[in-house]
Length: 175
Image (cartoon, rainbow, N blue to C red; front, side, top):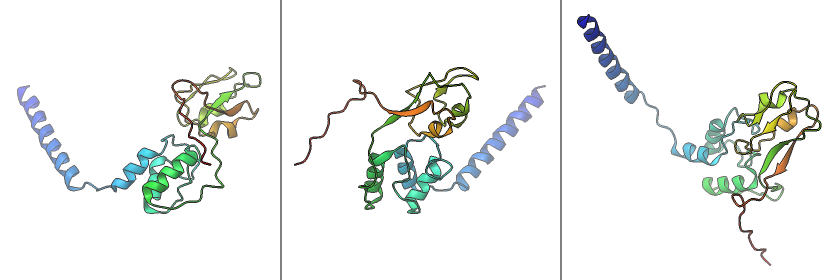
């Protein structure tokens, strides 16, 4: 029995060393700009930008293959930050800045069809079949995918309520 345990331990150490050295030898260097742009994106993986996830959108932004206004949940503030990071000039006058929004369920007309549950990328919607649904505010990223999917228009996007945790000092108007 000790021979079997010893041989398995030796094989585990040998294969572990082999895999560790192969990981170092075949490692692919990633562009650090991709990681920085990915950290700026919301990370909701909603797909509204036309890419499968935020990592593909970040790599396209870093390569200059996508406009900085591609992320609808990020809004105008994210587009400005991405333009500053990438050194790109962008005209944001046509882009409306509505501020952050969260999904809201109107309980009067929700039929519990669960279509919104299936498209929510962050699983922020709670509910069951033929039951009224609810949205967890902490998990909602405001992507709006649930609004498009709801057949009864029970889902809507509302502005983030102003609380002590979300309130910011408004910037003064420049005269």
